Amino acid sequence: MFGNYLIGLREGLEASLVVCILVAYLVKTGRRDALRPVWLGIAIACSISLAFGALLTWGSQELTFEAQELLGGSLSIVSVGLVTWMVFWMKRTARHLKSELHGKLDTALSMGTGALVATAFLAVGREGLETALFVWASVRASGEGSSAPLVGVLLGIGTALVLGWLFYRGALKINLAKFFKWTGGMLVIVAAGVLAYGIHDLQEARFLGGLSDKAFDITSAVPPDSWYGTLLKGVFNFQPDPTVVQLTVWALYVIPVLALFLAPAVTRGKSQPNPEAKQEPSHS
Picture 1 (spheres, rainbow, N blue to C red):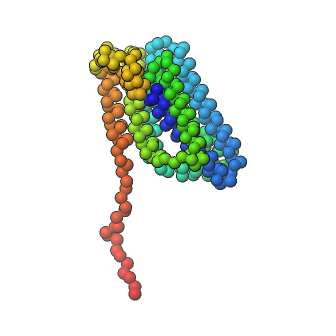
Picture 2: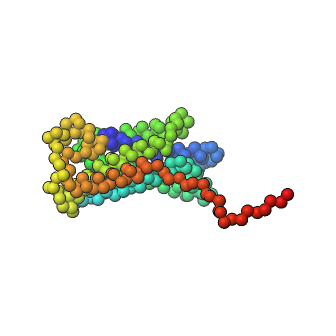
Picture 3: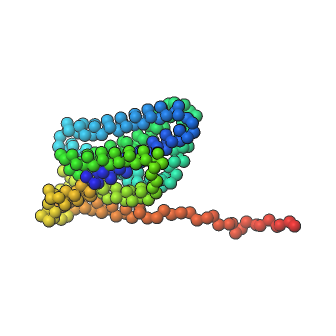
């Protein structure tokens, strides 16, 4: 449940911040007339994201078992790729996200209502579709048939909405760069578990081999139905009997990605003067 809460919190907070920046900029610049098309674009983005999540949830139920596993495994891998790109993108842009959105909004304001709707839709829609896909994959990995993962996601999104409102009102100030760095690192670990689960789906679909080749089996020490087994699965998507392929893919993903993500950003040094440039003589 905690892993899915983290997903809802981080993804929801990103979308909330985008909305806050757009709305606050229009209010401060005296363009309240542009709020309606912006809210329309946000509403369309949210509706499409919910429809996409519903399609993934109920549309896949009509498929055969192997087709469900193949679809689930493939989309899990795609969602991990998208989330990995997202956490690195946010690491780079967290400090200047506001100025980037302001520039896009200025361009849209000069182009008219349709451009405003499109700008708001694209700004929020990317987050929404990304969230729907990753939440669907994570809920599958965390425990099918249980409502706890979904409750965790909804609680995370609810917390994000409250934090976004507090940001807008100026009642809350935190270091967003540090927040996204540490939640992003935790999200990489969650994504690694989703990736391993996706590989298991592909093995059950007979797309990949090695389903019976276990790396280890500690189900007797960590029973899946125990409170600590449920906790490990809910937070890290931990599996007590992974296959060799699962464990290999998990390690090949989490070690380099986490190291790269937590590495300090490389800052460019100040440009050095050109030694070959001739200095102009001073005139007294």
